[in-house]
Length: 237
Image 1 (cartoon, helix red, strand yellow):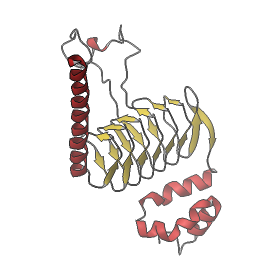
Image 2 (cartoon, rainbow, N blue to C red; image 1 turned 90 degrees about the vertical axis):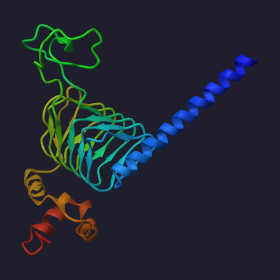
Image 3 (cartoon, rainbow, N blue to C red; image 1 turned 180 degrees about the vertical axis):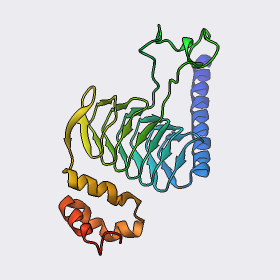
């Protein structure tokens, strides 16, 4: 009976410690990033930088990331060393910036021979860093990344692109391209070349909120949008 009581106390104490840790974490995040909405135990380290109205979902972790306004991250996602543009939709269970290993020239892929990786238990067999096992990932604006996608280090994804669920992105993705598969390949372009060129030069994601409220009704028709703002009198409003 005494043992049972001790086990109950241990469980209660562990639960209290977890709740207190979460409380401290949320309080720190609210102080460090007041314009960001963190849901549940979402986390971002102090090296991150956010613009306004960003949302970070449950059990999502962001480290060394720069994030543009109105971008949101769904649940259970991990991003490291990523530059993320504005108005991006990052789906659940997305992983980006997991690190890379050398596959050419080096005799082994094990980091103990080229990098001071903290996961290596037995020590390192080199005198200095010989290989960069983390490279920044650059994501443009208005990108949608589907469920369980993986983005390898060092790639760039152009504005307006869509990455299909479960894709493994191993190379750069062009603006307004739809890609999918393992490895990810081009499926189609979202719009024709004229429309893509117009959107890339127009850069609607840099407009202020008042402009977005004023013209938001035009966003449901690409032809109407391009035709309307192609008129000289309206192109810069």
